[in-house]
Amino acid sequence: MARQLQMAAQFPPVTLLPAAADSAGRTSVYASLRNAQKAWVVAEVNQGAANTVLLSLLQAQDSSGTNSKAVSNAVPIWLDADTSVSDALVQQTSATTFTTSATTKDKLVVFEIEPEFALDVANGFNHLAISTGASSASNVTAAHLIAWNAIQSASPPTTIA
Image (cartoon, rainbow, N blue to C red):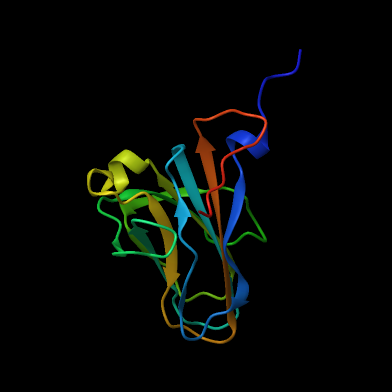
């Protein structure tokens, strides 16, 4: 018997940062976590130059980034330091930011967010973004959000709203 699970409804992937060279740093779109029980930000770093890359989680009150500020509480973080040789994610120290090493490898960094714990929901902060720090034009970054939504329906709720 098939399990009642639909990726599009329960785990819709959302592009926060499309893949691009990242010399100056950039901030993603703000995605809504209003309907999310949990969410994961999966950041990809294709490190072509030996520069570290700072990844920071931000929260806001809407998709325009109103009153944007750093995420309130440390969240679990996992790292795959070289995706060419392993798919193992190794848990790192919980934090609201992560800085990659300077080694020139393809990396995955995963932040796990429980909105009611990580965000200032009491004051209306229910949108999430990620920003990258200044690095090198040889470093390419991308980030995706995977939200575990509490609502199951024929038309899944949107997170970019």
